[in-house]
Length: 296
Image 1: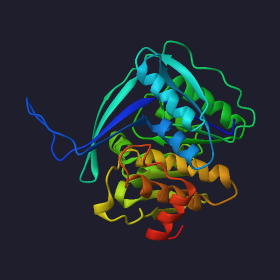
Image 2: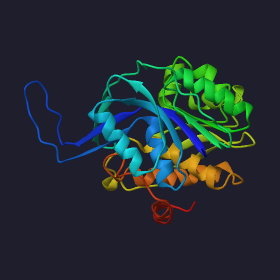
Image 3: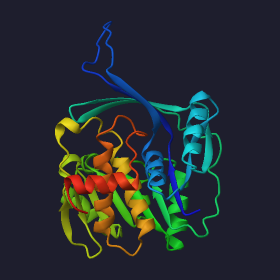
């Protein structure tokens, strides 16, 4: 096992529509995509597509959506360590004008304890806060073993503050800043106080406000993808996380600015495609985004 990702599985149904029906109205979507979903899950697929295949500890139900998900994982040769739930989780996503609305149905009533895995030789752990017991267990174990730990802080969860004490790289969303009533700058100070070696706040089209290995704060702007090429921003942050983990695994000696710039280019590819699977970039796609919109 080279890396371990821990999260919650969704099946995402993404609908591209000009209008959202209300009441008894009906509408026909212009396009749609069905794919895997979930923060750390999508990040794991992105990492695999970029050539570094991680193991994935995630929820799996014994239903037709669960079997669909396992088929998707097999396509990318991702080893799945399943934590059983009764029903698969589902997301309906409606991207429009650079934003996206999401309606979710989630089953996180896990039927069994999380699996105990051998992490000897592991080089990175990526979490999104789901499976709180598994997340804290593996974060502690990996921190003790000197393994890089990464967190996608998309929102405030019951274990967020405890978990951050064991995280090396924390990239959090603006939503977490709002929930904690902190400005992005104050959030960076908070992440530093937790001991996070690298920290940042992802701000969509404004890029990432972050601090580097020396604690220096700067902004990494998003690549200037023309608005008429932006189709679906959902999953862009997940691809970003998976891509910087892949970049770290490929070149652990490189500076984190290089890893985040690589991830920024991966996200630029994602937003030009409908659905998570279509938006997974390969290495050549990342290079092409960098050449088109800015140098790494």
